[in-house]
Image 1 (tube, rainbow, N blue to C red):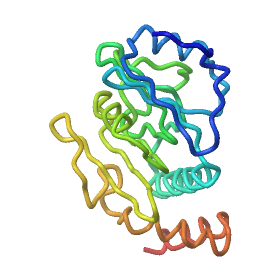
Image 2 (image 1 turned 90 degrees about the vertical axis):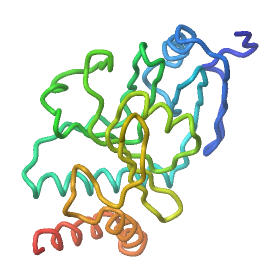
Image 3 (image 1 turned 180 degrees about the vertical axis):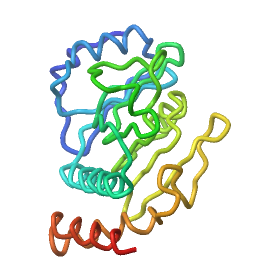
Length: 213
């Protein structure tokens, strides 16, 4: 790999991304080390292709709203969880890495309590990953390779649920983690409502409605 400008000195405008092809696993690890933990970009790596993305502010707002909605549901259903945000997940054997917008360990929450670093060659993948804006097939391929069982993607006012079935994602009308809630309906409604009354009010209304149903 010939790079004229060091990775950490490359500036990305909000909402933009760069793609680096034919990147080995070792080179991917070197990029991670060079960029460090405190950065404003997110990475996806699969099939020797690395994408570096700079999210837009509105994507940040959406991911926080969806994550807060998940926490409300878990709290009301009295389920334990560990939320790991945009943790870097990687598996050297599968040669894949991804940094979700948000992610949750629900079924496997006990496996990650107190852990600051995860290696998916040993640790389980998150039970649920959330993307407020999916920009490429590289991200989908990385999630599939890492065997994340459920992925939510919010894009242009619509939420799509992907469930892992026989190593590939299939679109689903229901959530594995919350089968009794119409997630594909409630998430867009929540975001639309938040744009009118604000996030806190929209989340409070959702929580009250969930308690009463």
